[in-house]
Image (tube, rainbow, N blue to C red; front, side):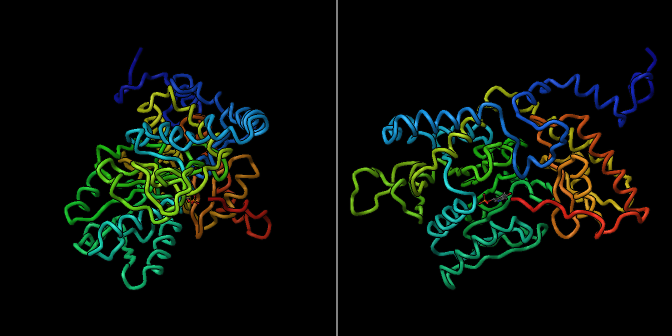
Length: 425
Ligand SMILES: *Cc1c(COP(=O)(O)O)cnc(C)c1O
């Protein structure tokens, strides 16, 4: 076989051709994972970073919990598995975030978990007043810290600074550095170990939001010596709409941090009905109220998908899908990539800007290519390596090129097109 200078066999399809994408799918060791999901036919779903697809088996599990556990066992269900679900589900998430299973619990929403852990950090650093975060962090993270600062009066200041200025603002008055490991808009990734180390050097604690990381990119909380983390159950973990979130607290802090939302499920002995709060040992103290059994059962079952997945291969495929999409769209007129285009760590989604972004995303959705729009002009495409194929990437890029061609020809105007679907978290 003759070879070109780049080492490609001369008769091999062009690297950016559809035939080549098909070849990648044939060679993909993870291709069969797609069968673990119930995906509607004819749809290219690129929004798994916002709401993951439905894993097969979840609907049956929910039916079983509803009919046989709730229906037949009634209140006995609490002692036949339901009480174990927060920790059992947390233990399934642990390998995806580089944590010991005993230090992760599935509970509440990401917003609530942020609040609990940020307040715990402030209580642990009583001589400090600042929560430092990135000005472009996900809104709920900033809103929760703002609310906490309002509650604490002048005692707490939320300091938000541009991404590039974070290091300069890590001063000795910082109690907590809280960042989203992968930026929800641009997919930029922080160096968790380096930032955590810098926080520790000035005596601050670190709290990482893994909502756009877990299940998509490698995370090593223990290796980075991160203090605390939270994340979402319904994005790359596929736990379903409004799935419970999770939280992590490092082993050395588990028994010293104080959960300000001291609900009875974080009590040492909830069913003693004691008059005073006494925190449980370990991670259990960060729970608050009664676990949402149906939501946890769905998330727990959804996480089974990951049990035998080759994680390094999964993460590598996610990066390859994003790189292919970036390469296929880089020369489209009016397009600007907001995500890192170099081979540096990024999340598993790609953000592009275009002045007609809103219209284009609505048109793509009507062609069966589902991504999402973020104001003012951002198009987001999520590539969940468990069920996205290389041909999906190619077809989506092709559809995008056609839509952009139309909008550049002036054929497109906002009135003539349907509005995009309502935004979702
Ligand atoms: C999706 C997401 C959330 C969502 O929080 P909820 O409380 O589940 O609504 C929080 N933070 C980040 C970074 C997210 O991406």
